[in-house]
Length: 352
Image (tube, rainbow, N blue to C red; front, top):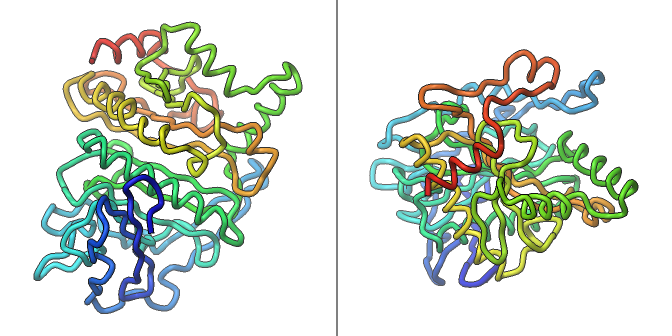
């Protein structure tokens, strides 16, 4: 079935029953017809875990002891996200793929409490999102939009969180280019804070907070990194991270599923530009965390106020120097930043 312009979706099951979904750039690939020939390895309580409520902070904490056994920085020849080949069966049974999404074998969420998925951007182990073609970047975005719509409509799911971690410096355990999707049974703390701030701004001014943020960045101009007719990338005025970039659609929509075809097609031009600038900034791959911030599922009030946008947080502040969440950030929630937002944006513009 087509889910966006020139993207075809087919689904099947892995040997242990987990779902795998292929997002192809041409019809009739036949990938979903390739069987997973491995012996099922999931058994008993391997996916067990629990959610515990922190009454001091008013937030949920997930415990997943089984994740200690997940594969850690394997060689390229042992990568579980590469296509299967004779003598090496992986999580992807097909001999090749465009974009593949499957249920995580080692989910962070407990069984029956949400769902964790892995999104493989390409079969090329040595690529990165920054080196994807615009066509492939659009396919990844279409996959994320699809998972937002499907998982967001599932029973018990309150929020869909799509993200990517890149680089060992931010805790990556698999180098193959991939992201993840968490379908959460609760609304995460940051999203709740966004909504509270947006509602307070609406009450105070009568206007939308996210519209105001985007308009202020464009009017100021100094913090703009890249833009086209549909997207604007800018450094937030109160950036927490040394090189933090927000990528906003010009037309406000609540989530990825609400993006129209023109906006989705225009995304790669700006985002690949931003990632290229980050990599060129210090002449080395930039470690970063990229998070899609979007409205909770099935909440009309949140959908009316929140704006989907991508938050890119890079932890390198200079060659050989990283930004860590130290005691003030981790213990008190008080952030300090060594790089002024205007200087960060200027450096990224000059890196073009």
